[in-house]
Image: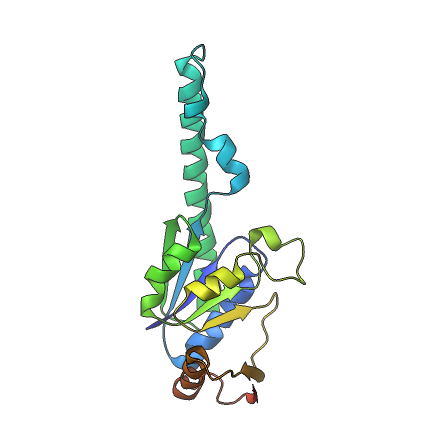
Length: 198
């Protein structure tokens, strides 16, 4: 089992790593750092125009567009590897000896289902790259990612602080029972003050 730390280029990435290192140390498990290269809507319109080329458009324009798309993808992969290397270095500096790096393409929600199978806990920032402008609001994909996950999700704020208090909203449902079981069995928050809200 691992701690799955999902990072992007947002300012939450450092805090995700710090929270993951804290959880890994507490639970005695390695960390898997996952970065997904997503297609952003503002780039999709520019990335593939092959279906929109007119009859008069030269083959050289299509070749240039393909080359530009290949270059963009290559740069995104290189940038992702650098991001993962920096995250691994930060985790090791925080005392996590076993760190695995994963670079994938697509949507985080899809890859989350695949990678969380081996995870005891998923750590994700409270916002992503597009939410950097407003740190007081939750990211637009956060609820969807939490619902997609079958593991406990720790949402990292912009600054790491060891968790000393927690609140559990208990509604009698299966998810609430699972959360209580995780808290009791994992020992992650055994030194924290807990409040159960019913």
